Amino acid sequence: MTACTPAVTKTNTNKKYKNTVFTDLFNNEENARELYNALAETNYGPDTSVEITTLEDVLFMEQINDVSFVIDDRIVVLIEHQSTVNKNMPLRMLLYIARVYEKICENKNLYRKNMIKIPRPEFFVLYNGVKDNVPDKQTLKLSQMFKDYSKNIPIELEISVDVYNINKGHNPQLAQRSITLDGYEIFIDLVRKYEKETQKLDDAVKRAINECIKRNVLREYLERNSSEVRNMLLQEWNLEEALEVSKEEGREEGREEGREEGIAQIAKTMKDNKEPVEKIIKFTGLTTEEIEKL
Image 1 (cartoon, rainbow, N blue to C red):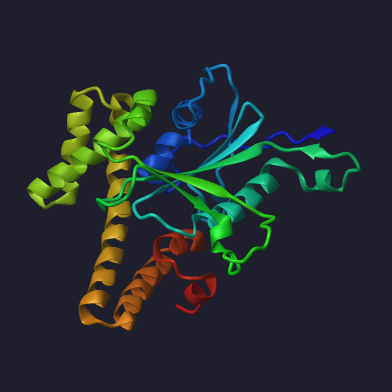
Image 2: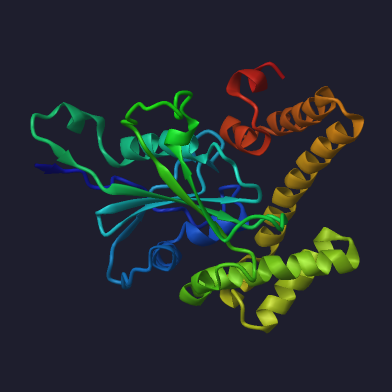
């Protein structure tokens, strides 16, 4: 049997990618290994190989999925970070994993006579939105998305995605097993706390960065990347806030078209700013065809 080994390029550390803070933190071999150990309750040590396989848009130097990596040449892990739980994640993970397998296995391997061996996949979503009714853990399944799911028909294709709530006070065992995840949770919690006090996101982010450095929380990372962290978080949260406002306006007006117009305007702004289609889809939920028409 022919082994299919990862043919990947390590994540560039010069900040050319327009990441979120989460993806910037965990597209790192050491932090990815630590996070997987926390999620899977494993004990892979620093000598265990980790190859980052996160998909990249070459034209815009943008990440398509959040974090993916192969650990110990045996497991390919996909992790998405979300502020809202997206019930379509099993299908999105299916599309991502197909592209990741294309990346780690050269196409010519598929035409060989001998069976190739590929790392088995595991899928996770880490939620840190502000909704209070999100459980500590839930599992989304691809089979639940099939139109005939309720019928007595065998399902030949399945993907299970474990969704964890990583807000402070939820799943504390994960933070106990991952110092980096714990630091990220503390940082986001402080930003939200200070934003409530000041009503100014930029001031809240600056204050949270300074407080974390003082408390030795993600200290090295924040000292080295404070301006990038500020810019990434401001961009991420401003987009999320704009989307939430457009949805709320649509609800208040009692018209779905009002919400759709707001989302379409946000998508057009992102498109005009040369944001990749995958990112626009991720933030707005629009289809490729709808975005092309804007």
